[in-house]
Image (cartoon, rainbow over all chains, first blue to last red; front, side):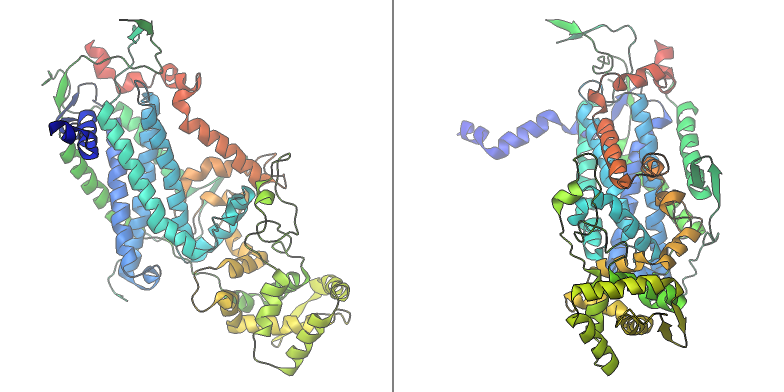
Length: 208
Length: 60
Length: 314
């Protein structure tokens, strides 16, 4: 009976999740003493900005893509959406510089770096599709300019930046999902491995 | 439409921008400010003293 | 236990030091609050740009000559879009690097025939008017050789095209029905009907603005507006925003390549820039696996500032 339960997909997945990421690792109440620099706050700042970006985007979604042109409130929410995006990229770039300086991929953390870098790319694409979904002069110009670059790769035939419907869908459905999922993976990896320890200049061997 | 909320810009940035040119480099003042702030923030994060951690003994 | 060499840029030493209290939820909550307040304040102080979109109506009313000339180029097949190549048509030479030309491999998938899509079809959808119907019949029943003769005559007279009293005048008698067609096309544009005709070709609902955007981008009026806003490619425009707002500053490196040789002068500049950026992006993503590059942070020694308390305590 108990072995039957042990063999379940459900219990196997639960065991492996709990083994890799027990609750006190997922939501730790302590951290290593070397985590003592302001540089560590930019990861969480990036996530906070992402939350504000998504929240303001949801408000803009309520009344459709053109609401903000004709409503003062809508324009203000659009401004919040823009400035939270600026803060998002600002914090993410400082976070990137910080993690690079610490070589934070050490000690089996390379996939944390990779997911972070891919999140950066997905965010650039999300930002870009936002710019071309504004339904104003800016979006017209950016779309007609960007088409040449994307067309030159062959991608323009499938990802048509002049097609508002397609760009808006990518901007409000596909890329936000990608950004959130990638961020989630990134954070889970950080929690599993913990924050990278400092370089030790004297260390020459590692247990294999 | 919800006009009259009075949420217009306090500082109007809707004029033609200013640009700085140095050889092949050409950058809008808006972007330059953002980039300078980014570098300044990075440096500040490196050098600013982090509160309340010195000589603290661990819990674990 | 077997030992192997410790690779300082790949392996991390095991930390055996002290742990300090840390409230992750509180940190997250504070971050959200700070970012929210900062965002609300920046939005209040600086707002956000919203330059009205250009329509074919506003364009043709602001600069009827540029519009009529552009429409003539679309009809004669001499515009940039008419000679673009893939994915719109087979007329241009696709961007390439050596034998690499993904644009060409993918082929025509968003078919644009500027003569038909931008001029003949919209005019044919207009209510019947004897002069227009006659001109359309003349165009449609002519051989392609005759059409080419007309196109050439138009191209020659094009710089002297004028617009006055609501009429387009082209000083040539050898261009067949082209002057009449362009006159109607311009009137259609100035009324706003052409904007509609270009988006309703696929039915009642539309979310696709490929045709009007391509048409507008062929004129000099649109590029002139962008030039004033410092948005063109040679002005580092990709990272700029209308007005004095910061733009997509994170595109600085992508934008940079467009300013320098050979990217700035190559007919395949876009492809070369994208190729370069793809390689650099791959290097960034795979940084932890690239010997040499992954040693940079250890040699830069910025980490000594970040962990200065840790090293001081050692």
